[in-house]
Length: 579
Image (tube, rainbow, N blue to C red; front, side, top):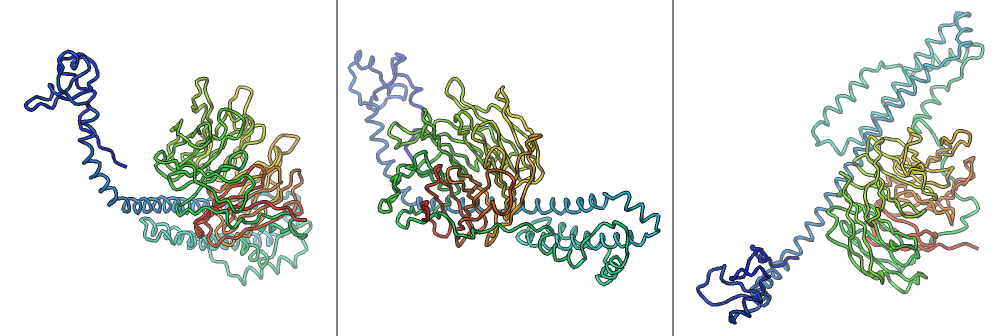
């Protein structure tokens, strides 16, 4: 941990005859000044002084110092380990607080959008229907609509206020909490109270009227029921009725204990190496390719002292090239490190450190088409593209700044020419690479989420910010624009946030891997439009006692690896086809 280090820079000193050669010996004769102590090889040959080798003198001086340092390290090591845990917990608290603030921001945006959508709904009218009302002098209907709209607005405000308050509870001790509460009271207080009985009377009057081609609206009882289901209701993700054709079964003896927080995992090209984040460090494990349950994973190396905060992303280079089995890591400290192994793939060294981001790295991927492009998304609201130069050095070649908040998720297509991104601003970007190798934003969708994944070039899925639903999009072949299709609710068993456990689509098995709350869900996904209820099937849901779960799947779909805070161990599950 500590090494003796002289205050002086000995290389700055000259020999006593000023030969301008490196000093190599020390004159131990008493009474000499410091500029008379050092000698070089020429000094020794010319004067035949009785001198001692410099390295031996340094070794003698540093021996008792090293003993003291060893004693000191024994004393402080337990303290430092505890402080590292303390620091890790602070970092985790910071991450949780930021996520909670993100959720609050999202809730307020949804509230604003709900009110605006209601206004847009009111603004649209059928000219001929309104003309009939005008001719027949039936203005009462407009009064009914006005009262109904007031009541709906009041219901929206009350429901959203209650929901927002539940998310504000952890911030009661924060400065500004009372101001937020006062604003909520003003919103509710400014809304005219509409008597429920009066609304029902208006509904009855409305039903009794025989207005030609009147626009149909739900009864208030139906509206309240719908709003209790969070305003909009989506089909629940269906479980496989005939039983899943496969399952991922845990290999009990194939585990690796790790008490430190693990927010990222990666598997190499042939399922023999696994990289596991361990707070600020990375553990490289080797396993038997056949996943023999009698052979436990072995720690090859712990990559330390490069990241200053928790590692959030890990990816292996997997193509047969000079980068094979190299590893890339991103961290909350805003840096990206590329690690390269030796020829036996048993030891990794930090070869490049990329520092262009200013805040945490939230997502990172390598273009699988040729692995000549790295893409990173950050809490600094930017997406950066990294390319290898002619001098075998990685540099930032382009930055996209279209997001207005944290970038959470990235996905690139098989051809490596189309990129998806999603962020805390509830925005999805569709970005394409031109012939000039420049990336351009081609489409923006204002209904994003926390994680995103291509399924095919024409279909992608996005996990909502709260992580409780999956939204599918498909490309309109006529204009090349992606359009929202179905949205499915997912049973999560708790909060669904899936930050640092990204959506992952496995092409070979047609499996969409999605972490939602306490569950890791394996979903059969459609590969061609239309996207209907019968094509999106929940094949398996793996339950965990706590919802702090991180994991990944191998490229061939044979292996599912997870870490969870309850077991504090890396668990391995093997794909098994059912007969």
